[in-house]
Image 1 (cartoon, protein in one colour):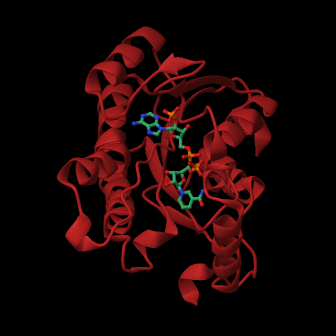
Image 2 (cartoon, rainbow, N blue to C red; image 1 turned 120 degrees about the vertical axis):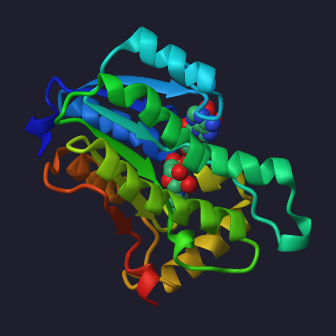
Length: 226
Ligand SMILES: NC(=O)c1ccc[n+]([C@@H]2O[C@H](COP(=O)([O-])OP(=O)(O)OC[C@H]3O[C@@H](n4cnc5c(N)ncnc54)[C@H](OP(=O)(O)O)[C@@H]3O)[C@@H](O)[C@H]2O)c1
């Protein structure tokens, strides 16, 4: 698998932390030339909700073999508390952002190239308070099938992780994080939450999986089936 990434040019939007940072580390280890992008911090500035930054990055950085985005924005509230701006921000990060990345990076991409985006289990497990996250993640799964058809032979896929110890949950107080992990582990078939390795293994495999396109690969310890 790893030799398929040697000398490949890869853009990782959201590569500054969490799952994106692990993909950066692993693809570099595999010999790829990796550019990290995020809204702030070291690397190139791309905000997937701001088309100007996407267009500027595509013009200045040139062609990539693979473009990845882990960008997301959360708005987990009951329906009566929904806020229009935050709904739009969530869909902008997960759905509009990938469309803009495709718009600006596809014209420069070689035929063997691919896009890889991040959905999430909540798209398939409706629960009160998660309607925005659920529908934006499910919309992304629909988006990759449409993009895969239009951009072929360039491949377009998504990974849909279950609850993963990526660092993103460290913002919760210890007790709440432990409760989240315990209930997610109990709700999975594997009996545990995901690791960065679980998710990065699948992401790297998809980058090199030349006969897989238009797919959302579920990496959730079987939690969708409980
Ligand atoms: N961890 C989990 O349990 C889990 C479960 C299901 C699905 N997922 C999905 O997997 C993906 C990665 O998760 P994670 O845990 O690594 O999340 P994370 O730690 O929140 O990382 C998200 C990354 O996206 C970047 N980002 C956010 N908004 C952006 C924007 N508008 N433009 C450009 N970059 C943006 C962030 O960087 P800046 O803020 O610096 O820009 C950050 O580097 C997400 O899409 C998430 O929804 C994760």
